[in-house]
Length: 398
Image (cartoon, rainbow, N blue to C red; front, side):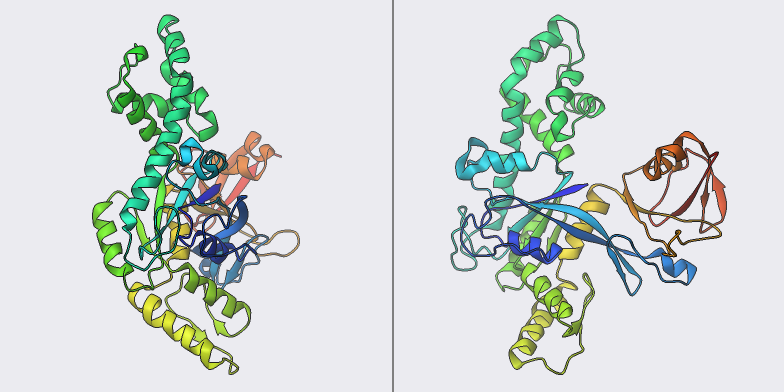
């Protein structure tokens, strides 16, 4: 799974990426600080299943803090996009191509309205963040439209003259963007487009189809960043009303980064996504205390969290519908090295017991006998749909 961070320059995207990953990246308030895409591991947060067994887990990947399991997810931070990106402005085509493999997008928006469309810093409230959402939608839609338009006449003619299924040709053209034949076929039907003679499609219909493909293959959550700036409050309410189809999450990437760094330094106790922190060091300077008090008063108290953890969780669990599944045994939760519940896998919607067996090892799926719901201690069949936080034992013939 790969999540893409997108947004215009100076929206706080690189800070958001660093707050998610603690990766060493350049952060500055001027356009194109990020040129090459940054990759790192963010983490989704779930209540660990070790509490169900009154034990403490020992993750091989990620970590567990106070029975909060953090499971790694790859995150890609591309350079800021500017209007005309699909035409190559601001190296836009390169940046858009970096997003091809992304399963979902987190769009970081400057909710305070402090930066213009080019990412040049201005005073808070001087720009409408709603325009940032619209512009990014349009740029990605036009990117998809360009890919579709480039070869449309050729494969539309082949599909019509040779009576081949149009959805198959579309899926082949967009395979690198996650489009499959069933998806294309369904969208053609939903949009009531002429599947028999695609040569009749107008540019408007092509654009509509491209937009539908983008929405399906690049679902998006909006991280309304810089929520600690006073002008952001009204803007966020307005954005939530104007874009009801999007999950819009108030965020302060700068606050999350500050809290994580303070926790790493042993100054405070803070678990990502929590609504509070606790000072644990007597060596905090007055400046540090003032900064922490500012975060509490302007971010945690009014919003309940910094929004950064909530954004990545929403992308994985709400947009993509993934579930966290743990392998384990009814009689033994530990592996050969004594690590308790060492693994947790993020699995796509409607994952079956057989799918999970294949994820663990191809031999498990080939020789599958049954699976066992470890919490309930009940056997389940290969077509059983697994649920979030399930613990599953696979019984195979070999």
